[in-house]
Image 1 (tube, helix red, strand yellow):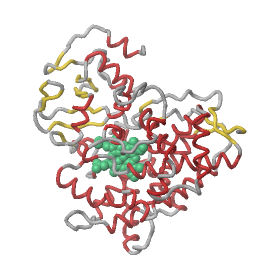
Image 2: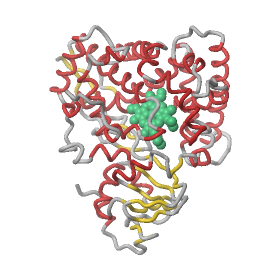
Image 3: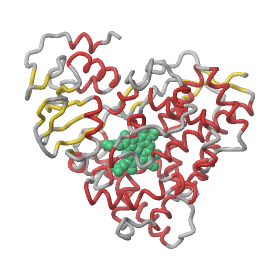
Image 4: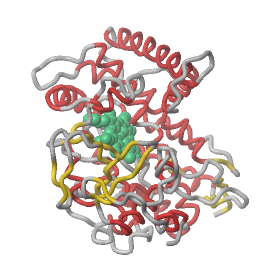
Length: 451
Ligand code: HEM
């Protein structure tokens, strides 16, 4: 495929190598390759590797970042010779001292305390899977006939699910949503702290959320029978038998809202968009969904939805919400036969693994049947969209349950109305763009028509 980046890569290279590793050509003055990494990131990275090989430097606003493709890149996620702790310094107010930015023993003990409520059994026994099913059914029942932006609906839905499983009352969701939107302005890399600036609004949003999380935790401590994930987290213990303290709970509840919202929202929206373009897949999903007694809420019930699960996996393969993650080398390494100095920042393109023709014949073809009829669970590389190693997504099973519930609810609701989805004319074409999460355009619109 010919893109602007292909043309840029053909420009003459002034400085071609650093530490014996090729520097990707085509960097722009001052900003380097940063603009290409927003937008069609997956194509950019695949074209770059085709041009200079699986290990190369990119420039990002004056800094060199090493990109490592293939299995050696995936291996780095195990954090044996790399670390994720740099995240705490880079975005202290945003990710803070949470699971994502810890390593070694501090990460292991926090993770062991938090894992139970996010296992398939934990999601069922805490009632989180039931809460999620109820929120999804209500949202899907309220979808208009169209044209409408499905992404706008799924963004609200995914955030409501996270907040409701934390025990936040329905009547308070609007206030939480509003302050959360202020908090995520912290992702904008403009740190000028003036009244109404993104940095000031993000800090105020975070202070509001943290104060409310503290109140929520205090209230939940007095109500151990309360359904949902917060109660389960309060009852959880790490491998040494210690419970989670309030500061860890606040930091990580904030992380859960951040990590588990735009990602799931994007997958649900892509799923609807794919179904709108593929009546054959729509019919297969509808038949499976209406044959079930309702939305799955337990691992056993989930097994009755193999086609919805296959759609979940194929959407994640082709439209991964997270394109890349990063690690810092804690010692000198060898990657693809080249020496990489200690301290190097390394980008691991987790979104690109889904396009590996060795794993997926005809990777550009959307084909959920690749995932059907398997006896073994997906391999680590097949779930690369959720990362790998000790930081593998804590919310993997929740995302799986939510998306299968959403697909089933969507199909059941439309079958009840005697309708099917289609792309509404005049909207934006559904192209995957990263900013920084991968999503369909908000202006890609769906409408429901007579089946
Ligand atoms: C389709 C949906 C999702 C995708 C694609 C996704 C992707 C990821 C990825 C790639 C990572 C690893 C980042 C790294 O290693 O640098 C991660 C970590 C994480 N995710 Fe997810 N995620 C999703 C949904 C969720 C949900 C629903 C939740 C929570 C409710 C969640 C919570 C987390 C947490 C807490 C971590 C950090 C784990 C750790 O550092 O130990 N995610 N996710």
